[in-house]
Image (cartoon, rainbow, N blue to C red):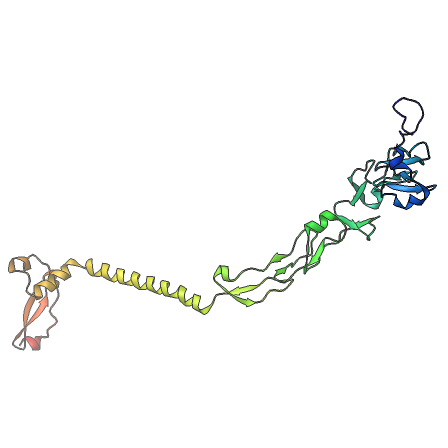
Length: 283
């Protein structure tokens, strides 16, 4: 409906003073961007959110009215009708992203898991799985204006077909102390292997530990060997006196022996054993 004047009489806006509203015929070309020419006069355009009801004349300015519900006008205009809001059709795969108002249109977008079928985005289609060598891009999925899949860039890979998995960066062999064995592709990761230098570096401490272990075992055995054997060795070396030698049990004392003549020479024989010397030898 046209807006009424403050006095409640009539339905026109308060006319703009002639200095700003109407011009002489020869000056019509001087209308500003917010004005339009009508019958050799410059009439004011209606502001955003309104539409033109009637043009200005010599006595009154342009008459404007607010856009009706479900319509909008986003710029200064002389149009007599506002533009209807777009409808986000559910069966076309669309959903409302931003509600429209008097100055802005409704903004539609594709539902989750879908993207626009073309540039106009009047309908949406299901997102296909990203094939091997391509990954899911969250930013493109949020915009829903195109397929969220994007080929893996150099240095990244994807070895699965998925609607959610992105491209992953190649592994860093250097960070693991390894070297590259097989370079990665857009569908496979880098293969790493130990370098010869690293293998040698790992072998040295293992060898050193083994040698140290063997040395320790040897020292332990030397320090904890049979004490009787040590005493016997000390006796032989003459380091112990006679008083120490008597209590020491030797192999000879453990098995007492007796002498037997053999060919005129004494022969030692252990006690408890039968003499095996023939009668002829005893004679």
